[in-house]
Length: 376
Image (cartoon, rainbow, N blue to C red; front, side):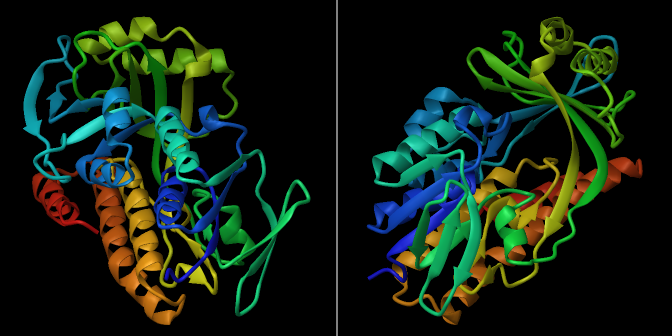
C-alpha cells in the first residue's frame, strides 16, 4: 500500500506533471492545480537531454514527445566570423541510453500539454487558474484552502511551482535566489532547413549566440549577455535590440534574423540559481523542481533534474508504506547532491565565461554525463 492515498500537486510544469502521472498510475488520488490559465502559458522552448527523455518514456509519453520535438545527437560550435564557420562538431552523450537521442528540442507549452493530457488520462484532476492560499497541516494530513474558495484535505502536498514558489514562501522557507550575472534574449520562429541541431557561437559582442530546433517547423534562438535592466524597453525595442546583437553572427543566424519580426515572440530574463539545503520537506509538504533547485541552462539539465525529482519522489511514495523520516532520508540521499552537482557545474560554466577563463569544459561535461547516465 502506498505511503499516501491523496496528494495535491501545485504546479503543472515538468516536476508537477511528472509526479502527478506516476502517483496516479499507482492508484493514488491526485489533484493538480496550476495558477496559469492554460498550457500555452507554461514556458517557451526547452532542450531535453537523454536522461530527461528516459524519464518521459517512463511516464508513457515518449511517442508523443518524439513526434512533437526535434532530436539530434551532435552539437555544433561556430565562430563569430563573417561565415559562421563550424569549428567543431561535438557528439552529445546519450545519457538516457543508446536507444534514445542524445538531446531533443521542444516547445515547452507543447511538452506541458502532452504531460497534462497524460495526467488527465490516468485520472489526475487538473485545475487551471488557481492555487492554494492556506496550508494547515497536522500529524495526519494537510488542510488546503484554494484561491477560488474551495478546500481539500490531503496526505501530502507537492510544491512544484517554480523558482518563485508560492508553496515555499507559504512554508516560511528562506532561500536566496541570486543572479548568475548573465541575461538571455530568447526568440521563437520558423526553423530554416539549415538548422538541424543546436549550434553555439562563442565570442563576439555576446557570451553565446545559439539556437535549437524545437520541431519540424520551429526553433528558438538565444543570445546571452551581461545581466542588465532591460525592463524599460518596449516590445519593439526589445526586438530591435536582439536583432542588433545578432548581427555579429552569421551562417544560419542570417536566416533566423530575417524571421525576427514579431515582438511578442521575444523575451529577456536573467540566469538565476539556488539550491535548497536538506530538508526539502516541511512535514507533509515537499518542494521539488525549480522550487528546490534552479540553475542557468548552460548544460541544459534543468528540465531533466525536475523530472528526476518527480520520478524519485513518486517511486518512494508508492514503494514505502509510511510517510516517515526514513522515506525523506532516502529521497534526499538520491536527489540533493545530484541536483547540487548539476547546479554547481552549470554555474561554473557561466562563471568561466564571465571571467573570460578557458576552463576544462570537456572534463566538466564528461563528469556530468557520467553522473546523469546513471538513473536517479
